[in-house]
Image (cartoon, rainbow, N blue to C red; front, side, top):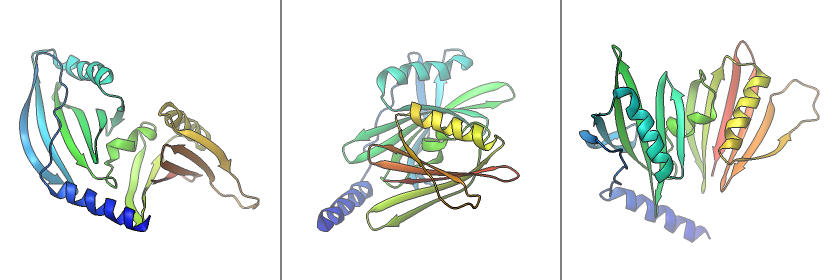
Length: 225
């Protein structure tokens, strides 16, 4: 098994070292993509960036992409992140993974949409991919990756203006709607005040969530696969 894992890691690393066969995003009618950057590297990720040009009304472009992608793709997420609407699609093509990200920016009342095609390796997951598990107005304080033998993990520390109970409900609601299964909450016999630990599973992934109440509500989310 150890040799098989090493072979797969070697195979995947070499696959991403080669030229990337970029997928072609599905786009609505009367819309075209104008390339801004090709095969660039940003924060360790390879990506293509396009500006969306459409003869549809600017306010309708995002909604048209949302309607189209929900009929064409299975893993579609929508989140408001940093006061911007973001639509994302997680694509699987053999050993390769990609993320399509549509971001709507507003400048002086004019809305412009940008589409990024991001090449992922199994341990790379941009914030947009899992930020939808956090309620609106959450602030990510720290985001780190770690690898212990064949186990990959990502730890996100964030804070929220919501109360501990409200935040727990909102995060559970988002994970459950995302087809994660909640495992019985982990409890401690200690009388000390400790954060409640929640556990969710989805396919080969697990997330442990600790919620603490300080001046603001602190969330620690550890994803493993």
